[in-house]
Image (tube, rainbow, N blue to C red; front, top):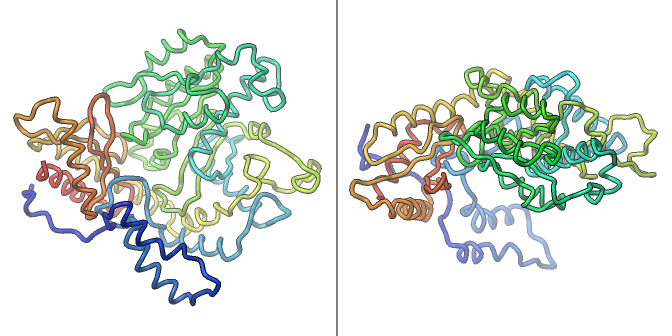
Length: 455
């Protein structure tokens, strides 16, 4: 491979400025005046003050998070969404919008291979989808004990202190938000150990069920692509054990579920169709504008636990399509439209290629890093996240983590590359993410070599 010195200088993908400098540049934008300004002047002001500080997700040097610019089909739908400004809560506010969201939900269930009786609803984000899934799990747990959670709340449980949720120790932090919001507190989260590839350890999972007590567990969360390392838990085994124990199983597929559409990676996601609920973020790999998240349920009747009626809005006797009965927001954006136009514009064949490209880039880069001196792969990547350390010869073990922090800060201060860092056990790892098909293996390796040269 080429030496680090041969790496080409890249254009800035963000300013790299300090928070103080960014605030200073943005201050003219919040000086509201009596008289307005022409759109041409407003555009010029934004180009000068704001745009330099926005991240260029389209650059192959953006390798830090899951964001991407809208692809053309999605952008086309988003413009129409804004133009018509449709709320799609129910038939009253948008007959076409409400019906199209309902039809899209069914089509997505079919696309991902969920059962015939499954259904879906659009959410604002994966965090909201995970929260609602856990509410549904807790509600069913209450029903098993003979009361309606919506009426009595958690005080209906004989001992609310003994309500537990099992999840991987690498599960997304949104689960902490969820148990806080549900009034359970973080004490209700029971972490399950992971194996050397950061997948939930099934043996330890079974032990935790035995130790915690089956009657006290209201739900289990498996992760289809952790946001830290991209690892996929053994979904089939977790789902089968949970079903046998009569425990609600939710799969957090916000990041990784899309990759189940790629034939070569689909076996990694087998068992997703067994889950009671699954979350997904199309705004990641599909390049659909935010907000665009989806919650699937295996049984469409499970959404009835969310249903609320009123005299003027969502009346109980109304039989028209009503997506607003399936989730909390009473004002819902037309999020289905950009996703639909994106899929129609690209076609499933192109979408699979779009998804496959970053997966192959990470896989190829990981193989090369394993052979490079002073670069150590932290784990074999399941999906589109590559975690590694720079370990120079003769460095003291207690200084390795500090070195990764220094490398990260040095790169981010220049604004030419964007990477991230994470914790893997007691290791600080440098983390490269490939979501856009623009990110190829050579771009990932260039960043890794840059990290080594800084060290």
